[in-house]
Amino acid sequence: MRLILPLLATIFFVIVSCGSQNSSSWKSPDYKKQNYRKIMVLAKTSDELAQRQLEEATVKLLKNKGINAITAYNTIEPKDLKNESTFIKKANTLQVDALIVYNFGKVKSEYKRKPSINANIGVPVKLGIFRGFLGTDIPLAGGNRKVETVNAQVSFYNKSSSSMQWSQSLTGDLKNGTQNLASSFASKSVNKMFEDLLF
Image: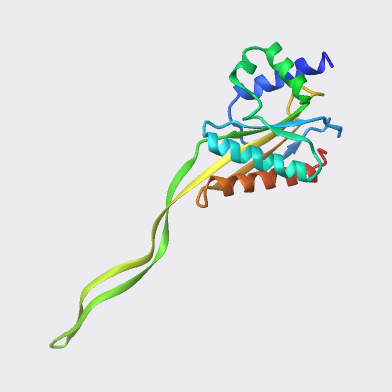
């Protein structure tokens, strides 16, 4: 146990300090399925609400499948990250021996043109052979729509190795809010983890 916790602490500090990466779904060829006492879920974002939503959604899905999991936002405090030994003590107290980490790239914003539906308001007129319409077109729907795309990567680390054991790229948009995106990311991640036989 004394060797496992320093290894877990090293993993945690590496993922907290590293940036977002983009890669396709991948699993380490050396990975061996094992029973985990507890898995911590960490969403690396400065948006506290989005962090809570994603961590809670992932933990809920894991628990529904019989996996003991906890969120990082309400268990890890800044004082726990002072140094490696402090984190080891915290991890030991929490019985955490695996981590699921979400990393995020920049949110890409773009405007997409939607087909417009217009209503004509005015009166018809006849001037000689010219027939026309005095008035204007009023847009009822369509036009430009702002789309914010979020690119992320979810990774899995465990006590048996200091390197990543599994990862998957995620993409979604914020048109329905952060809660819906969190639910989507969590569902895709947990389903893929089970499909890839991590648990």
